[in-house]
Structure formats: C-alpha cells, structure tokens
Image 1 (tube, rainbow, N blue to C red):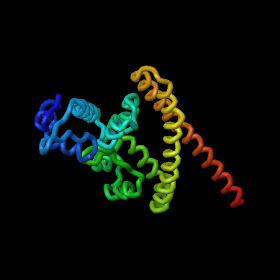
Image 2 (cartoon, rainbow, N blue to C red):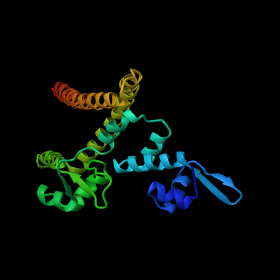
Image 3 (cartoon, rainbow, N blue to C red):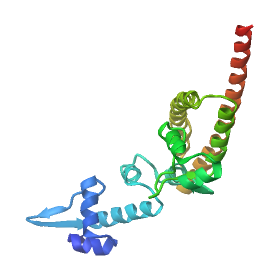
Image 4 (cartoon, one colour):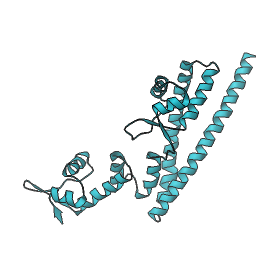
Length: 231
C-alpha cells in the first residue's frame, strides 16, 4: 500500500503537520517521490504507530529517537520509564514547599539556582518532591547551629558536583556491565525487561546505602583528623 500524506495522516491517526514535523526531526523516513507527488508506505504507518505508542508512555522525542535508531532496545522500555519518569508519591509547588518548610520562597529559589533544589521535570508549573522537605529541614538545622548560609551553599555545590561525577560513572558501569550483559543473554523481551528493571531498582537502593555509609564514615574520619590537628 502507498499513501498520499493526507491518507497517511488518516490511517495513522495523526495530523499532517505532525508528519512533517517528525520528518524534520529525522523520526520519519523520506517518502518516495513521483514528480511533485510524494508517496508513503506501510513502513511509515508502522513507524508513526510506534512513535505514538512511545509517546503514550511519556517518553520525550529525544528518547523516542534513540528507540527508533536501535540505540535502545524494546526490553529497555520499563527501565527507561523508571529513570525518566520516576514515581513521585507527592509533589509540592514552590509556595507549598515554602509554607510547609517555613523557608521564604526567595531563599528556596536561591537553593534551586545553586542546584541544591531540583524541580520535577515535565510539568507546566515547577513542582518539587515532598521529600525535599526533609532536606530543607536538615539544612535549616545546620544554619540554626550557626553555619553561615553562604558557606553551606558553597559546600552543597561542591558536594553536588562531586556526586554528579560519581553518579555518571556509576550509570556508565551499569550500562556496560549489567544492561548489556542481560540483553546479550537473549530470551524473551518481556523477561529481559523485567530483569533489567528489577536489577536497576535493587542496585539503586544498594548504591544509596553504600554512599550514605561511606559519607558518614568519611565525615567522622575527617572530624577525628581535625581534632587531632587542633590538639
């Protein structure tokens, strides 16, 4: 079967402008040209259905493009969804976060600009995980104890930068030594998808425990060394 662009739009259930937009983004292959007339085939219909299917799962066009290019496997879908759209039990607007934490909105915006407060992506209005209340409370305890806000923010930025580097290295290790191995084992796509997601969640929890444990021990060691030097 071959379709004019209007027929393709009706068959795939999308707008003509959407088809042209996808072509411009490289998500949809070029049609066959016959003079001034362009013809699309069944492969274009299937590609449009696949794009719609991935969009309904909440994936961005950037992620969809990686799926279509074969850089991400079908068995990656649940894992990618868990990473790009993590479940957030409760979220708060900036005003709600300010009201419940007792911290003024300008100060919260300062924390956000420093990278210490990160809104959830994807919404029209910035919202924040309710868990951020615990982090704000912890920071306020340090400030109440006499730690200057500026010094605390500088420490936070240094820590965030170091953690970011470590996290990127950890993701690379997971991709090379866990994800690729599971997919190389073959088997059914659904089974690989479940195993990938389960393994990722297990390692995410284990990583959090490991980092927290290491930081606490390192902090105590630094405090001991500081005391000994002062003595």
